[in-house]
Image (cartoon, rainbow, N blue to C red; front, side, top):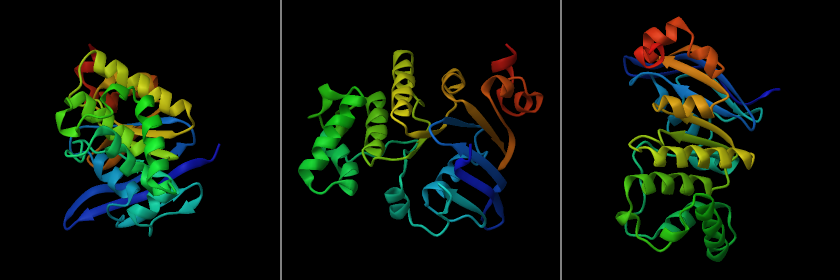
Length: 241
């Protein structure tokens, strides 16, 4: 199967700092692909490049076979790329419905259509009872879910989830895992960065490990957890225990 998203030898420099160094990975359509690695490994920088926040210094990105290097974030969103942020960025003075409707406006012919799509997305995220609540009143768990809903309302083909389980506990993590599975079942390709290892190992079909801006390993979760280099660089006692 050919790659839906292809990252080919991507390097990103910030002055003298090399944040990504010849990073390559392929994401197949309809799959859940995990990205793990220690803090500072370049994970969010990779998401920023895929989403178009800034271009690669070197390398090439393709989506569905089309080169997207020169596309703006807005153009990439129109092509079907959506992303979340580690720290949720809702419009605090708007309701949950209106926050999600903002995300839905891009592919809608009018506001009423956007609000209808937003309502359906909120239901998928199991937030229906909070539809009329202001974003500023939500708990961190609900703010994380709202962040996913806003991205999903753009009708993405590729959804980039940046630590959506960070700060969540117990049942909240379980609910988010179930939510991501439901999203993937609708045909959306998911790439997620996560430090909650049981979650990413249960969700991801393929895992890529970054360390110091380079790809350390890529493979199925069970293979990654047995890789001595990955254990030494990142997993450590969490796996060996």
